[in-house]
Length: 135
Image 1 (cartoon, rainbow, N blue to C red):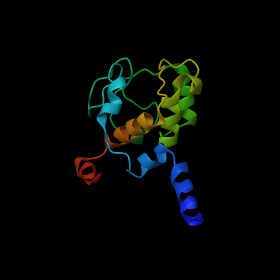
Image 2: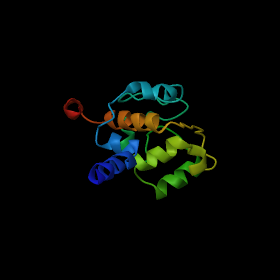
Image 3: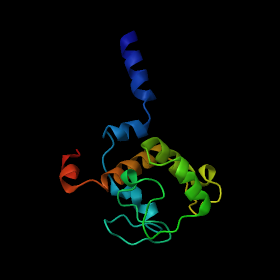
């Protein structure tokens, strides 16, 4: 009984971001619905109010061509060079608390929705062959 309780506590202590990282959370583009008013996510897609997010998890922070980032975000991006699931989770939790003066003002309160969005963002930047391998 003690072993079962210990195992359950370990599973319950794993955050949804970690579960997303190991693909227990399915790729669901519905989680991205809130983002489309400001962002596109197609390969070669246009920038809107915010930059195109294609390959955002692999290209580096503040690295979208033909997009003018705010000075404060650009300065922050020099210190934080790549999006990790943990950093993206913090960003989606409350962007303005991370970078005061950024144009993006977004807040997703539900951890499960943030995790699903991160999984979706990670899937939108890999080759078609790699995408087919994602469960």
